[in-house]
Length: 112
Image (cartoon, rainbow, N blue to C red):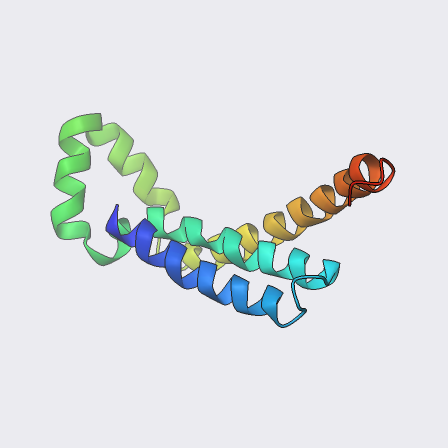
């Protein structure tokens, strides 16, 4: 909840500043800003790192011990930078896909 909102705001503002620096017209800045904004998803996992003592009992009660134990094998502190890099990289890939779709459909049609 709160971590996702906070990271969404932070990464959204950074992404907007990046895109604004290209006057909202630069395709490369748009792609870069999409990669940065995609990093907001880390907020979904921060409770497992920052507030684990209070968050994990709630998750354990809802999903069981086996789920939490398996999940925590993947959510080790050293995995958070890996997750950020993966989010950024897939955001960049998504930006390139979006640009290709824009060119294919809207530019050809004379809309954009």
